[in-house]
Image 1 (tube, rainbow, N blue to C red):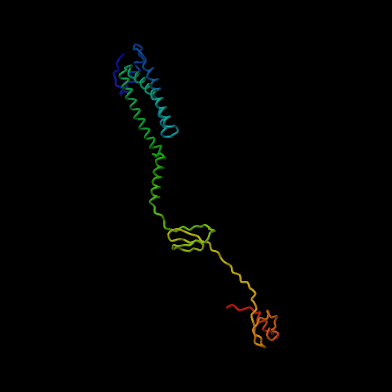
Image 2: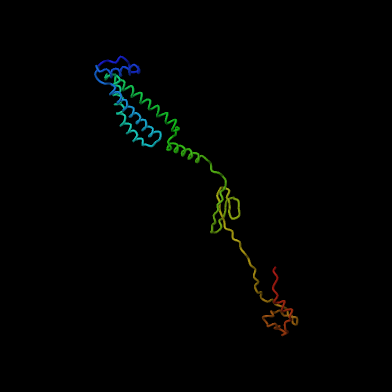
Length: 248
């Protein structure tokens, strides 16, 4: 095998040398038959790896474990394609082909990592996973709620309690049927309005004095006749006896 006269970084001269070597029928082997398929396999595997990484960590359409498994399966095809390309590019020189393969794979991995980070920053918006942000916000809200002092404004209860009126022993403000306590508590009391209806009750007849003999007696009990002298009770005394008593 002939030794290549150019280094790998001299792309134009190196490529021209490989093409001339391939077209020279006096030299053994056809490097283009190895380099071109190897390059296509490497590019296809690399493109698929980048797509899987994008769907896994940027679009989150694939599970992370599934994405890692697919990348692990595609990576050997990429390395094999790069080695075939390097083997033809270095004109069948195995040590130089292995060194070129290691350089290309290392640079590719570094480039993929850089592109992935930039894609997460640019397209992912630098979003923090919802679990961590939710935990932080929850912790902050919980801490602030504990540190916040309770307001001293009294609360008014809107219940109707059908029990006996409660006795309020603390100071408070009476708002109709609702009693607001000074310490923030509330009590309600039921107000019952009593309706008093006056009914006239028959009053027992009063005693009168007989104008003839001066004896006192009740006309209705004695059939309107004085029991002492037998004189009939005058009409005006009967009315006076049956007249209702005035309220004192």
